[in-house]
Length: 388
Image (cartoon, rainbow, N blue to C red; front, side, top):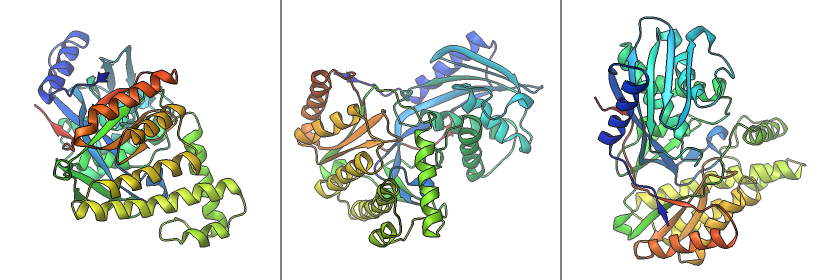
């Protein structure tokens, strides 16, 4: 089986700094690090004014950055041979494309605050395309770097908003703000209950060990794409439902009453997922507040996956295989996590069954001629910070 090792912050920083020296020359002014995330429950409702419950992973992205005296941005990464060099005034929707959009987009979004040119080298342990928010980890580590280097002293909320704009407007991914919020606000040993309607947050204790459980993250190694129109189509469906129902959010609506006001079966399914998922997040937060992270929480996770698979239609054969195998092997619950259409799943597992569940998931993938999954450790980590 493939297990992804956790890389210590020191080693991540060293990797970013080494790339900086070899590709850009000289020394960086500093290194900043931000985590990837897994969403415990609350999927595809951040952009619907819902509640979400993510936590930061011990897999992160480090950026080594040096301030320039001009308006040029140079960016390199250990994950690709494709570098990018451009001017701040050249950045716009779709330009640049690919991974560099997440770097350039943050510079663009913070341009009104006086950001200038920089050199940046990226080194990450967050698996790209896994649905574990490698993009937000990059955006937030870089936003924090720009804030420090240019003496902006901006509130983290401003940096979060800039990172969201980079992803939405430059990279063209119509995501909500969950990923950026957790990258900037995470606390060790906690999940973050984020109210996407008013932006308020509350730290929720997530002590899996006390409950005798582990959260297994399964990267299915199936391509995870959010910029291919599918994500946008789900958001457009909700906009249509808002118009038909005469509301601006589905938050607080009674499910039966809401769907009775819709005639289209697809809209009914999409709205059913959003309203029921908000309810599941509320129940999950209550369970964790009581220190319960066993069978009851697992049932909510599994119900979430079924809703995402059947009503929101964002699952995939790889994700379904992982979830079904985990449940067969004794997991309390399992669900896809992230945007879907590939990416990762999570399973809440009795501590003594971790290897058994992972083995069954790997065997199921092989039997179904699916990509071999990679397994990750999920322990709630801290937020974006400067390493040196």
